[in-house]
Length: 101
Image 1 (tube, one colour):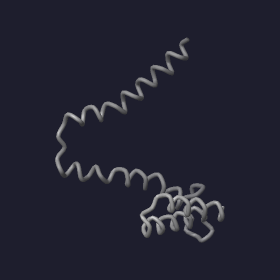
Image 2 (cartoon, helix red, strand yellow):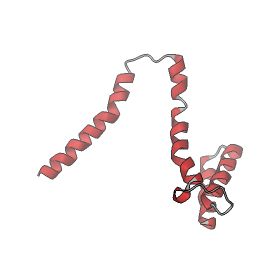
Image 3 (cartoon, helix red, strand yellow):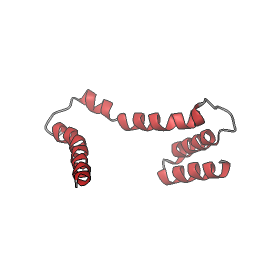
């Protein structure tokens, strides 16, 4: 029974932590400068997750043509830039990674 109480309690705490900023910010007015700055947060977070995987496979810097992740990532970036289509970007990036990997 203690295990279930702990699991449910942690679920409630996790939900509350994620809900609190939304609930607090809906009542506040955010200046245009902050609003514009917050628009860049998703891109910054995504870059922080993806770039180390492209450039540091296995924890060491690898900028060679043997780095399949880097080549697939660069191809996906090119497709995203040219087509603006997420499905094509994912298909090309994952397909190339699969072929090269």
